Length: 139
Image: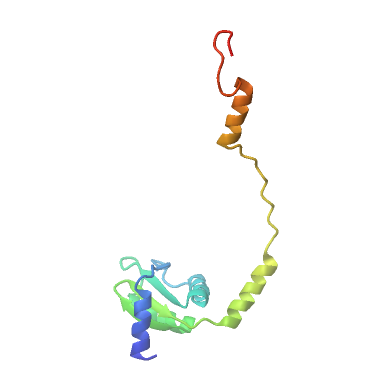
């Protein structure tokens, strides 16, 4: 990856929020699988490393993540790791097909009739005689 491409990806990553956090447990297989799935969808991710509780430094964690995910490290600044991996369209299409098969029919929402102000006013007028309430014995 050239420095211009890396600079462009850093610019794109700037407004992103970190969606994964690495804490006292460090890197686990489950975390790596989740990050891999997110990379398939987003291609560019920010990961936060909790500096006080993480078992390793962010640079060490990034160097372990990159080969495990087959991704490239864009930058490591403070406790933030930015990684990039080109999305695999075949993998995404296969996942979408399995999701479509697994979908369950949703129950149709019930139709609820809500009476608006106009309908209420009409009913009130019919009951009270055109909206004028009678006092005493007079309409």
